[in-house]
Image 1 (cartoon, helix red, strand yellow):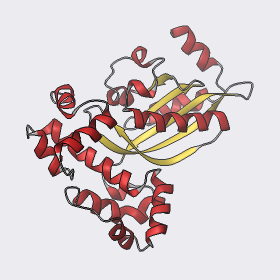
Image 2 (cartoon, rainbow, N blue to C red):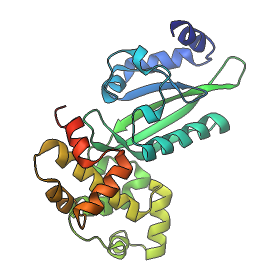
Image 3 (cartoon, rainbow, N blue to C red):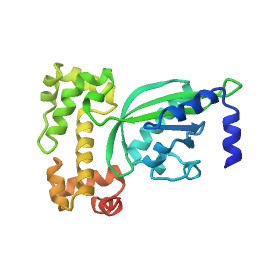
Image 4 (cartoon, one colour):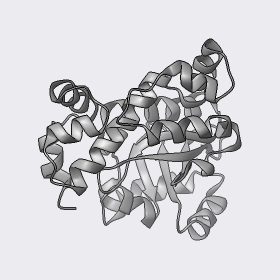
Length: 246
């Protein structure tokens, strides 16, 4: 492992800037991946996010080792775009799972890493947790009130047309712009917000699962269990057993 990392780093044209970034970003998750989207290095904050202690533990890992399938697939597609097309991702807002099993919204940046011969050797990225809607990047601020409304009314029926009116857009314009920014339809965003609320409740309370389902805006326990298990690849009961003591 050490020889591979040393060889990988020695081939990078941007190594000096990369190492400086480690030192100046103590509160931001910073990571490096190789051309195959495998983790090579990350800072201590990132290790904590992934529930690891040592760099060796993350070497060679992929997103599926850390995140639910749908989240892992979105991250992988972004990584491939950066590496294969030499593109940059700046202030991408997305959903991941933190070290306690909670779904969290983050702002992500990814830059291609060039080797000495000019080819793309991998990528480096940063991730910052967005704890409040007013921390969203500027291009997302038009949806700040919409997000606040969804989060405040997660247990209630949420009408997409009402969300469009809040954002001062027509229904079709709202759906199109929302998907363009979040890469999710409004309905998918609402579902993930409800899953987020449910995951927190499962971990932090001992409320019955049916109560968690209804309090998170799901019509019944059966539908909740189906959606939750599909996203997390764990039943709500198993999820609580896995994360509840962390």
